[in-house]
Image (cartoon, rainbow over all chains, first blue to last red):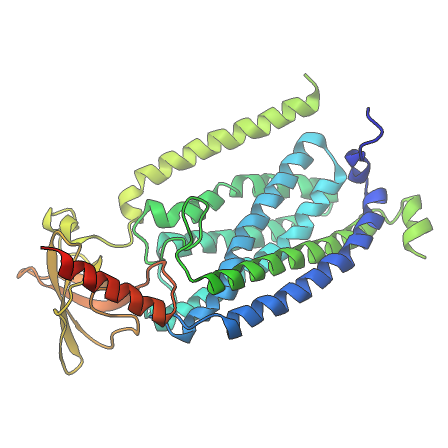
Length: 247
Length: 146
């Protein structure tokens, strides 16, 4: 093995992951605070009014980044779940369960802000179109994952059951993303995508991207804080926790 | 092959099977997942008879007439037109030339009687000045055409 490179597998052990994460949290928490202030300032003060929707469109600065995040967090959870099942690493299961509550929060925010926007713009709080329904299923998948893990006492078995649910549920993410292309939906198509130029004003786009980065930093900070708690809970009997973390 | 590689392969295989199964199910449900029908589909008789369904399309420019809270307008997908009548308050984003979705039944006279009208927003977000510029450019392009 080449010793000049960082040995990433070292950090698969909770004992060496715990202090590393402790050093990273303040950085991401600060980034989240700064980016949120910048994003809200651009979104609420700098960005122009929309030609048709007036000021009501400004909900996108929370709605769109929250929706992106809810889908992305589920993919990350599925990644950790697959890693945990294949390599039997303890940390993978801990990361999966640390991410779930934040994912559920963003899925809920996405649905709630969408409803607030939908009432004045569409004329309905909720419609059963493919995009809204699949996003609701994502929210239920998060709740199901949390409930399933909480229902099983043995943490390793809880991780396995949760991992299978996370992997099965990941099929829903592309369905959410492409639902507006595959079917006639009331929900509009993507304003920002990888295949074409964004169909919105530049300052609006900037505000949305800043908020997306803020949500990323927030998610990382909160998930790492949560994984530290889970590590302490599960490794309470091992020597290193007593020696280092309890100081 | 190490056990962990076997497990990884099993996961990938299971996900692939599940993905294909989902794709087949969604494909079978294709018509039921449609939120609205277009006027062309109505003209072709693709919509269920005597049941409520949704119609979607653009509100034809200059077709909106109001009588109290009862309004009537023409929905078009640029190929076919359907007249819609609705009594109730239209949503904020409801404009002529814009998208909308209405729920209701098709009468025998070919008129669609709506019980609910929703405005459909497009994916374009732009400030009013840009919108004016776009409109003027479109007008200019129209007048230039022979």
